[in-house]
Image 1 (tube, one colour):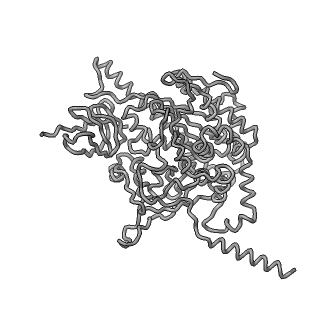
Image 2 (cartoon, rainbow over the protein chains, first blue to last red):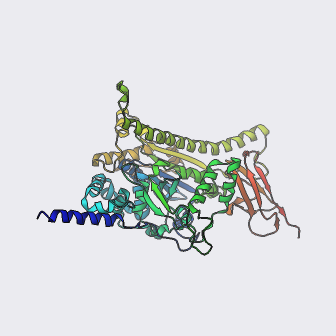
Image 3 (cartoon, chains in turn purple, cyan):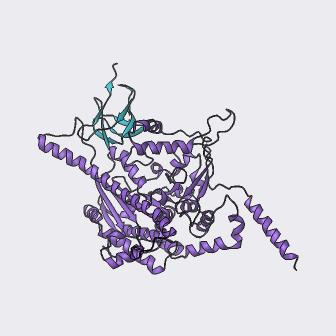
Length: 490
Length: 72
């Protein structure tokens, strides 16, 4: 008996070592040939009865189950919002064209991309009411997971991705989302650890890696988007750049060359990021296969680059060089009304540190150093949306004022730019009027499990905050719309 | 935001950086930076394309991107 224990320990150690030496298994297959008209792209999704004329973008922020439940509550409210559009009554949800999501918000976004309206029957039981965090912790601590976790190529987020794959997304890949052939175009966002740039899960981005997004599981995309730094690890993707005949769009070189002119810093940075991901070693043998300069891409939580998921939509609204450029649609006079609904689950729990003369501790200081820039950046992002809306409105004001002063039409020789009505809507705990109520929501933790009552309150407050937003009310007025109270009808 | 007006004697589709973006003789919105402008349909215009840096424009003073009918 005594000799058996060391033998078993030795066997366990060998097993651990063998597992630790197991090679990296990429979760993203290579793309055989670059096909700009194929894969998960905005322009390849059928519009059916969702024309661009009323263009609705929704962004879901990070914040664990708190963010997922708030986003889900807003989805329920959009489903129940009835509007009149060209003589038909329909749900506003059926007019949503794009959903951009981060971290916790990526769970309902991905589920909706995969299952559409079935989300309302399944998602609460499959995710919102589940103790996901405890189940993940249980799996991480289980000896059965140790061999895998001992591998340097396998992290806690890989384990989380396997759990989501089995328990939430049923093994589904992007191929199933593509097969649905319907809007909204759902963009889950992670962060490229090395560049700090946002990394959207769309084929346009995977083209750079010569990888086929159709073969990536929704679970792995969501796990990347929600790889909360510290608690969860980054996820690794293989870069096959140079192997599929990919060609950058023509604007990339122009924008990269503009860098020295400082003409448009953000556009040049987007170009540089694309070039960096697709770069191959320049001095490889002519007959040898191309070798990417960055053979592996490590993705962490989308909240690191943008915690409210609004940067992608802002780029799309402000640039003709974007994979789903809204500005291009405006130039083509396709859009008459543009609504941007930001669902922001940001909190601000009271710290209590100012009640004492004690010097704040290391953890408190490090947490502040991580949270404060992120919160400030989110505030700046919201200001950018307000500035963009103001700029569009100012165009019209300038032309009207000029016409009044000059007594003639002021649009230069040609017609005025296509006028678009803008509706920036924000669902955020900051707008809860009752102080006690607001404090309760702003004190909720960032976790992948919350009590059922908290989830239900979040669903309910999402609906209420949407209904109370002044711009949402203006949108409903122009669309003869109605959002009934929970359990009521219009 | 920057503004351009791609001028041509007749109505044509406008391509900016290879993507269709509005039509000739109307003010179009673009982001600041260097862009390549082309016209669609027939090839009876010149130059074939124009590469221009667009910056410091306003809706009241857009950059004029002029194309001309090619002589027969």
